[in-house]
Amino acid sequence: MTFLKNRYILSLQDLDSNEIHMLLDTAEKFKQEVDSGKYRQLLKGKILGMIFQKPSTRTRVSFEAGMLQLGGHALFLGPNDMQLSKGETIEDTGRTLSLYLDCIMARVYDHTDLEKLSTSSTIPVINGLSDRFHPCQILADLLTIREHKGKLEGLSLAWVGDGFNVCNDLLIGCAKTGINMTAACPKGYEPLEWIVKLAQKEGKQNNCNINVINDPIKAVKDADIVITDTFVSLGKDNEKIQREKIFLPKYQVNSDLLRHAQNDVIFMHCLPAKRGQEVTAEIIDGKSSVVWDEAENRLHIQKALLCSLLEIS
Ligand code: CP
Ligand code: NVA
Image 1 (tube, rainbow, N blue to C red):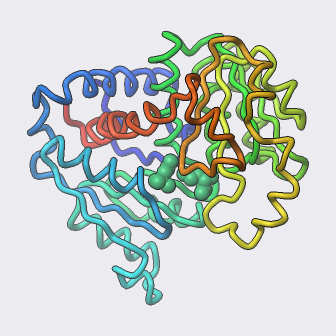
Image 2: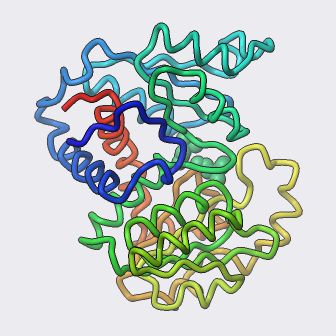
């Protein structure tokens, strides 16, 4: 295993393509050995602090279960659990937590909080979702794609919907692993322009095209993978009505849209999903859906990431 010494994983930008592949290989090994108990002592004595400013099912439980599966321990630090909620700075929090813990995972509203946490912490920091990126999700997605398609390079992926945090990081992840990605988003809901430019540049080096358009049918045409996310991300509840008007019906993944893709297309979604909104029940619960593998793979890829950051093999 290649170690990620003194590293902060705030987005897929923080990993090169070899490191991504190394993490996928390690995750595959962990997944195969989960029942054998072979790695049950690997993180013995290690403690992960999990800061959550927003709710979570998969991120919280998969990180905690992952630490336990490898013999370590995880501390849940909710929105009201620390002096952070009473005005202590994020920098002082990072410095303090570094004295007790081996690694920090944080889910925050504002991505700059993660940057501040990284600057002040002397231990690894992992982004568990911010308003800009979701690297653990994208690593799990790449693992899921590789499992189902046997490769990454040369595949065609269509993103349909909101070009927010998951989409931003997916653009980078696809560019680094040679997946052609077209994101179809409504006007005004496209991914961040500087990220698109960066991904396009990186994609060129890896022989893949990265595009952002507004037409979902064009994006989905002949795609091997179709992926979407909620229309109303955490923290955007006040935009719910306006977003539904803009996104529906054009940006819903349903059988009419999916028939433009390859016959063996896989459907992906980071979850939580709203059936009848960004995706129909027929699709998410249908034969092309791999969303449960995607959710499971969060566990294995995060174990790989933790071991690599903590320099344990
Ligand atoms: N996909 C994901 O991050 O899910 P949670 O919000 O439940 O953690
Ligand atoms: N875009 C979603 C992802 C949830 C995992 C959000 O930010 O709420």
